[in-house]
Length: 196
Image 1 (spheres, rainbow, N blue to C red):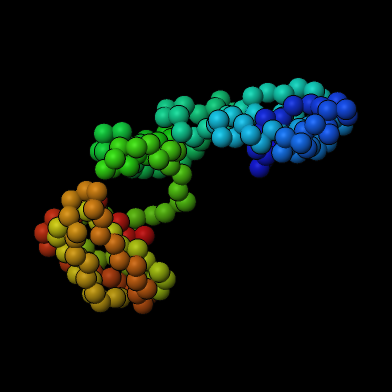
Image 2 (tube, rainbow, N blue to C red; image 1 turned 90 degrees about the vertical axis):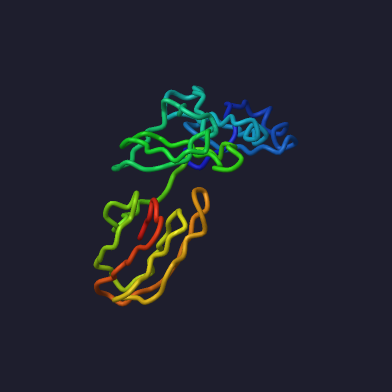
């Protein structure tokens, strides 16, 4: 039952009326009435009824605010490495298929499990960027980096992006080039650059 929230318990017909008074909901699964107590969401509890025998309830946690732990019923996959901010405010790289718990780089507060759509950074050696040319389509592009340097764009798009300071201050520019070769001329400190 994907998309379900709250604890699920099997109810007898006489208990269904009491559930409505508490703000819950009921439905039928495997011929049994199943109640969802929506009040348990705020406590990070989210048991789901499994496809097992009728009247069987198996706890299943969708709490993604517990660093380093995912419910055994959750499968996490990612085809590449990816970065995140650790509890100390430092950028780290997670291995393939390793979940990332992201933290605010300034307050160090946990933001939760970091899940992003698939993207490809077309820049080479982007940790410390140097001048390069890349082929881009005529679609929206996002350029960003940490540092105090400047990236001057020419060819498929003309413009520049000036850095706003070291991490966690990230400069960014959204633009739509013509299809073709985009040259990025780098001056100064341009770190962890991305063109997606």
